[in-house]
Length: 112
Length: 116
Image 1 (cartoon, helix red, strand yellow):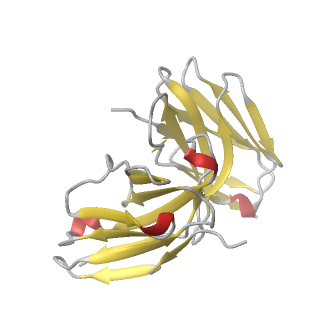
Image 2 (tube, rainbow over the protein chains, first blue to last red):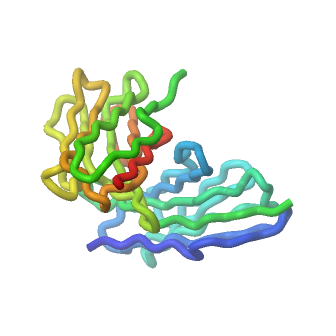
């Protein structure tokens, strides 16, 4: 059974803090890793799709790195803002896989 | 343009009843996915449609669950004889260009199903 773990499950930071969280996935048969942001009462929104070991992606104050050999990805948020409050999901795709396997997400709360 | 839409947004039903959930994908997207998120769990894959190919039903949890996609567009997820463990948020997503799984998936707002 392929397992995707995200940590921490939740965290609370102050506006302006930088933060990061982790997605762990099987290091064998890796094909792609997706990151999504899911705000309350909205649809999950794609952030990044990463396929190459060492890949780094950036979108505004949010960035992500990928290590396929050890099976983890980090998501970083620089200078957190209240609008960053959401659940951040990662999803793993194995080679020859037909479905994304999602983690349970990290719920971020940013106070002003 | 319009995103993925789902209806109803909320559905409360009694145990044993059948329910139908609808998904309208983004126009032109060839791939369509159904997921569900039960309380405290991650998103769970249910079924995947790609163009005119036979759907991948490997994620359906039981034979009470079925889905159709008519004309390569609208999809309906049907749950027969609902059980309390079917209570979840059901999400639909679509993606363009042949449904490569490195494609971004665009999600609808979900249907929250509560089975009493």
